[in-house]
Image (cartoon, rainbow, N blue to C red; front, side):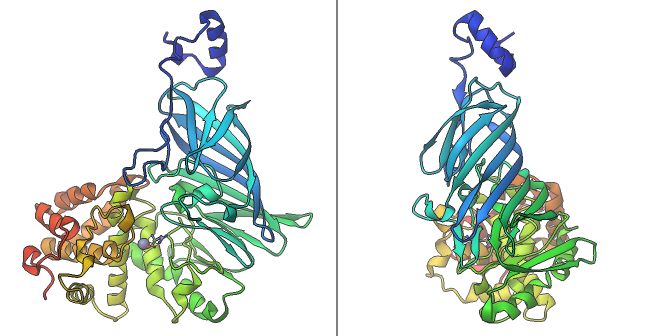
Length: 472
Ligand code: ARG
Ligand code: ZN
């Protein structure tokens, strides 16, 4: 029996017999990154998380967050050491019950050295007790934790988790989440999924949320503040919980007029993408000043700025489209961002058509014609934009143009079969741009190499004739 197959508990005894465990030389640390070329330090190697249990306490007045993360994982190699991605201050780490050594390293790594090496393929429970002021922490010069007058919010892409929980921060390692947060009475704590309970005592209220389908770490969210909650149900029976900061001012009406249509929009999207994949739904608007919205799983994050000019159902369509394209099926690597953003934008075009505000073809024609060939927009390759252009407008607009080109190439029947079939094909998993091309070819029987190269990978404006799609 190879020593590495000895259970951790038995290893200490074995090492007494052998003086030095024979396995020690072959046991190595897990990689500090999961292997994403855009973000080499994001995620980690050597294990796979199945569940995060986060039991926290947050004080809005001081932005102090403290608590315990219990992480259930399985090793994928022998491990002498492994990393979590995290920025707050760690008080104690236990691995399978025993205290483990830990040290901060790099921009956002927490290196954990268990008392005895971990054998490949074994279940591991990691308990991290921690505290800190999330807004005081930066990595690479920025923060993804946004203070609000009444609390704080963790929501960003591709990274937000490091500011509030330790984890394997890459969409390739999805897990289920229980997030339970104690906040002062009169304050709410919001997260993904279903509100399991609220319990008040001694001046604090604990909100316990459960997201019980695999969820990427960047899609986990925590918001604390003073919110008005509304509830409803979709036509298909999914419970909806929305939350609006009590201090949205002039934006309050427009935000509600948009987000209260979440159930209707999710039902409408399911006509294109198949059944809504999760069992909870909603949206929330904290009192932030960020410019973006985010498809946090089951409960997207919206900034009040989205509603500055009035109602904006289009952004709701965008974030809800991501529940299928981004959340149910996630990028395998961040270079695959088009399989999220191109489709969420295209859903907005379909909604425009539904609302009588311009057809998808008209919006594609406009997007194509409104940017001259020398516009740097056309140098961005949506199929591999580079980390600096991950959220460039071209990933969205040229990305949706690529879908209109595909639709014109393979015809409506095949195109809408692809749109509905894809989320099922890779449900709860990950996929690449190449996987999408393969699936579209499989469904349509067409050879699509030229079309994909032209619209997603060529660093210049496609000529309409090259893909015989969009008229000038
Ligand atoms: N996926 C988000 C959306 O389009 C984009 C988030 C962009 N993040 C950022 N920090 N700019 O809905
Ligand atoms: Zn998006």
